[in-house]
Image (cartoon, rainbow over all chains, first blue to last red; front, side, top):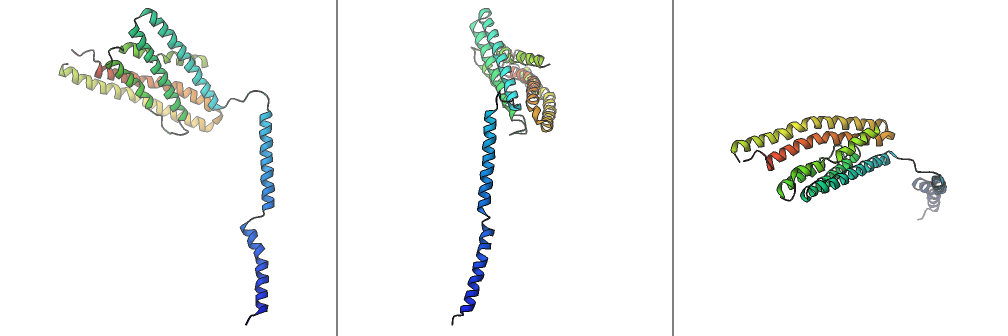
Length: 172
Length: 82
């Protein structure tokens, strides 16, 4: 036998409960959509405002560090070119080439050091020692190859120092 | 090369690197600690702190490089070798 009264009660109870379950499972979409659109509109307005700002972009701390690196590189390259040019007139070709290779190694060392200092505290907790491989390789190559001289290589490698001293004096 | 000169060169190379790395190692550690603390306190001064750290590291690490060069010269281009 079919209990029609019981079925109708269950059906009405199911119909009464279903909207509640739906509202629990899926929170009201209309408000959410309105919130999302409003937040997107705010972000869009902020972007528009940022794009419309006149003048230069303010210098970030990372940009300041990059500018300092560029100044040091520029000074080191100028010092290296000057010394290599003077050496080309005064000394022989072997000494000049050794000096130039040392200067390039010094610039590469400085680049690696600057990169490891830039990563300190962000991606790594320790200062990388990879840059020390540059003078080791330089001395080993200069001592093995008869075309290169050791002392000009070392002098060339240390050509980045005057630019650092100049930078320190400039800042102080 | 005389064996005594060879032995003395190897010992001197080890001492040059080992003793020469103590001071810069301590200095770099304390400098890095101070810099990271400073950046954590004042993130807006990160650029200046990192720049000063780069300069001080370059000066400190050159002391290690001097010891390293002396050691490598003693090992691979020894002027006292006969």
